[in-house]
Length: 296
Image (tube, rainbow, N blue to C red; front, side, top):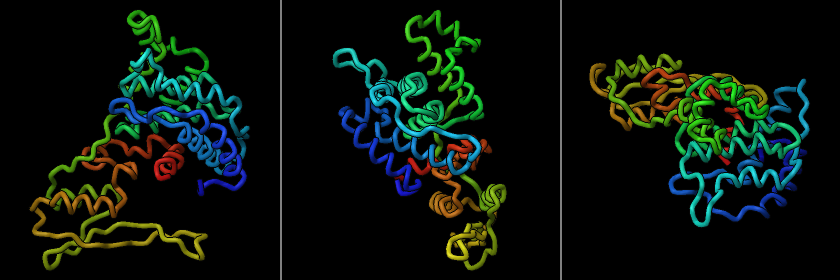
């Protein structure tokens, strides 16, 4: 947790020792990667650090209010009957985790925020991303907390089909409709087509010579002892035949990595090749905490 301020780090470490006494269960059900106690706690403090730094006007009471309720909310992922888990599909596991974190109110403040971050995170861990406005999910969190999911027109239909656990099945359907699989495929492009795509993201191909061509991109470089950033132009070479020739998958992969246009940067193949809105634009302020959570 080297990213956060010292005061929050100290508080996190104290609560980590208490919370980690509770967890003794698998981190995976079938093919679904679960969210752990520590990931929730780390996510919470990354969010707290972000909002304290970027939203000075909005106060936030930080810390766990009830550790048993927090463990209960996270443990909803592995509810079982005998040796059989109640939830085994990603969307229902994500739904019950989200519902528990919102409704249990285990933290003093920020419960809807951490529930939303963990929903995005568990989906991301399992290869899915938000595919709509984050405002749809914010409204979902608000209505969940206020017991107002029945205001959605689809709710009654799901209630008739699933009279028990209606909220979870509603959330599951919402998640299915509002998310998509991360696309890491590389689609065939000529050099001319690849150049046109790169230019949409402020990059380009340039200076073909001697069987190579430059990939030109911008990168931020820290100046004045790291206190200021300056955007500088960078170049590297990939093989080149002609503008009408197809770019090799290896060269495309290398170029996108250098240009910071990969799924980890919020630009999976659906964004770059198909024109879908960038992932990091959809999750807005959750981008920083989500990326830091993933990198630790």
